[in-house]
Image (cartoon, rainbow, N blue to C red):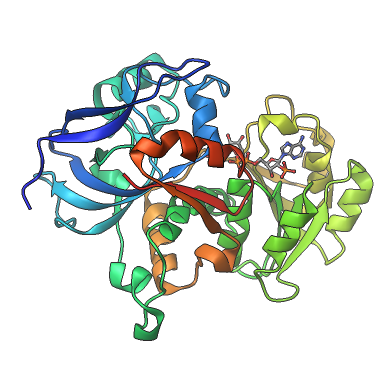
Amino acid sequence: MPLPTQMRALHLPTISSSPQITLRTVPLPTVVPGSVLVRVLAAQVSQKFHDIYSGKVGFTLAPDMILGGGYAIGRVAQPGPDTTSLPVGKLVMLQSFLRARDNPEEIQAVWGSFDGGLPASREWIEKNWKNGCYAEYVLAPLENVEPLDEEKLCGAKEEGGLGYSVEDLLQLPVQLVEMGGWKGIGLQAGERVIVAPATGQFGGAAVEVAVAMGAGQVIAMGRNMEILKRIQGCYPKGKVEIVPMTGDEDGDAQKLTSWGSVDAYLDISPAAATGSTHVSSCFKALRNYGRVSLMGILPEGLSATYAMVVWKSLTIKGQYMYDRADARQIVRMAESGVLRLGPETGVEVVGKFKLDEIDQAWHVAANNTEFGKLIALNP
Ligand SMILES: NC(=O)c1ccc[n+]([C@@H]2O[C@H](COP(=O)([O-])OP(=O)(O)OC[C@H]3O[C@@H](n4cnc5c(N)ncnc54)[C@H](OP(=O)(O)O)[C@@H]3O)[C@@H](O)[C@H]2O)c1
């Protein structure tokens, strides 16, 4: 099929308290070396994206952009001239961590969500990758496109496939973020680990990823017992234990050690959790030589005391996103069935919308912010 010369896309002139999002017909992007044109099949919609576009999160984005984060599933429409493994029609996962090829450690951004905030990263995004996936087609950096085994992932179960829908696959780029956290602290098979808070989109995903990576037991901590129980119900008895955040720092720490010593802790707290006692409880629950992955966005100091970190010989690792190789690994884990997606992990698709239904999609997203609610845009 010849490609069209134009496409429909959702356009955002600039971040504003009342974002002026319009559906436009724009020229199809031109494929250049190092890029792939992808036909978008499903892109994730979440309240957080709307919060970013309305300036509530404080992230910066290039003006005059096609919106949509890089959490999407699509098909290769036109590979760039230097592409070697992505034929036309190949099902692919797009992932959102953008790094400048000549300076990957310094120039970083999150596709469609944050231009990195530095003058150099902002300029790089503005010139290259400001347009996101809320469009019929998106021009993606080659290294952010991961091929998927469609027969395995989406094939019928009776024929050896896993029976996932394209929307189910939207969990993969979220799970990828959590894999970055666990790999950063070297999660070992058989270990007992804590995820806190475990009831958000990323926290909930961290539980399944830890189990898939071989954790012996995951302790999911959070305020919402209903969601924690739903997550626990997705695993064999004893694999996932749940602990409520009660605000009793020592009592919660004790509860976290009810099942034995704790090897590692992944924190993914949003700014709203500033001052919550759960961080101290989790640090207290760790065994000597325990490891911590900090992935959240708490603006204020760590509540763990300097002395505790020293006396317990703790390792604290900050983790922003993941390494490129992790994208291949998360896909292989899903293709092999080790990592699960979809309803088995407590995640249901609560809405599927077309580009011209974006307002309805935002509405549904605003009412489904907790872990397990997936909203898809199918351009
Ligand atoms: N490091 C990275 O690479 C990376 C990548 C992606 C996201 N993040 C960050 O991760 C954070 C979480 O993201 P998310 O998408 O999972 O957020 P989310 O879906 O909004 O979930 C927020 C979580 O925080 C909990 N929470 C909210 N207020 C709290 C409080 N006062 N005390 C204790 N818990 C509280 C919520 O619990 P309830 O269910 O009880 O409300 C929920 O579990 C964000 O800040 C995001 O910026 C980091």
